[in-house]
Length: 126
Image: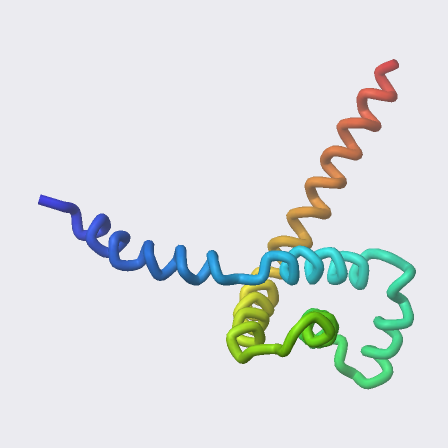
């Protein structure tokens, strides 16, 4: 007899595979890179100043995601006509990244700091 959790997983697994398989991973990676830049690089100070000017700093990741999506739609429209399926895929990708943005960005920053500290420690030992 199968466990109740196994039965639930068998019902959820195809849905999760479909959801994650249909995401626009190029958009997700670009969004994470752009959000990292906005958060930690001086080259994006103009964006942060603009957001602060309009008192929308609480929505920085949302605005960055929408701006990235608009750019993706512009380039897609240059190649071919944009379908509602493409827009739906971008919106689902945007939703996933907005929900997990802090995890991705903070995780990457922590990994970079950790690796940098390891390199620094090894150089001090020499």
